[in-house]
Length: 176
Ligand code: GSY
Image (cartoon, rainbow, N blue to C red; front, side, top):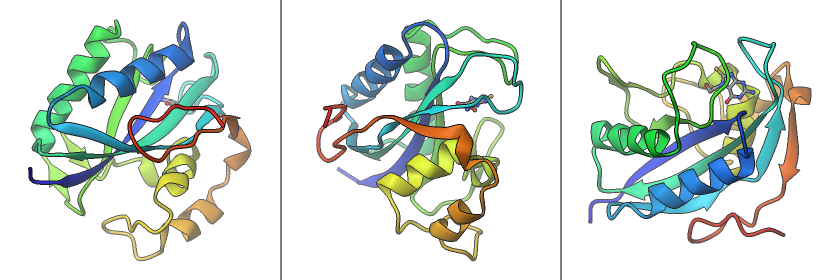
């Protein structure tokens, strides 16, 4: 199998947030062409964008996949749909949100896909868990290492560890 490396950001702030994240990881890992290699801890995060909504749980996962970026997006949308996500207001509350952050070191721009995710470098709820799972990774188009981007984030206080995860192997979510 061709092994592409991808990183996804997961977020939920409606219903049983932990269950939503776990189920999304399980659904992705049950896809025959996706293997979830590592999960970050789960963080409770202050909402960004539209602030008058409940706190999010966020995490980042590293997966290997034979899927193209566009097929990976379809798999994410299918998982979101099975978890009952509706097309809600932009920036508003959501049962589950799956964003492809990185796909190898590729820059991809299509009608449906922007990779690297355009706002990831300013978002503490993305960079903090990404740094946990892949501290050495380099973001395409950025000259600075990930660590420097994390250090410069102004709103790290809004991202707090909620559940520590032993992320190695399988789809994880085993507790420490
Ligand atoms: O883009 C992801 C959805 N989202 C989030 C999120 O996942 N976490 C936090 N903290 N704020 C957010 N605002 C939006 S939109």
